[in-house]
Length: 129
Ligand code: 5GP
Image (cartoon, rainbow, N blue to C red):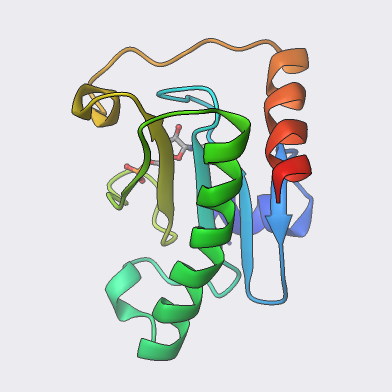
C-alpha cells in the first residue's frame, strides 16, 4: 500500500480538500505556495500515463474543479499543474497557485505552515468548491 493509499484510507492524516468515488485531493505537506494541492486516483497506479484514457481524462476534470477552487481561495495569475512522481510511486497531479513561473520550481524552499494554517488553507479551498 502506498503512503497516498494510506492517506485515502484514513490511516495517515491529511488536510483533505475534495473526494469522489475515484479521486482524492489533499494539501501537499511541503507546499511551494499556500494552496498547493495533490490530486490522486484511488486506484493505486505509479505512473500517471499508465491510467486508462478515461481515468486520465476524469482525473483532469476532477483536478480542474479543485484548481478553480484554489484560484478563488488564493488569488493568483494561474494555478499551475505539474506531474513528477519521482518521490511517491502513486500517480498524482500537483496544483500550485502561481504569480510567476518561478513559483512552480520544485527546487524552491518549501513553506512551513502550522497545523492551524494547513487547516485554514484546506477549509478555504473546500468553501470555494
Ligand atoms: P513527487 O512524487 O511528485 O516527486 O513528490 C511527492 C510529493 O508528495 C511531494 O511534494 C511531497 O511533499 C508530498 N508528500 C510526500 N509524502 C506526503 C505525505 O505523507 N502527506 C502529504 N500531504 N504530502 C506528502
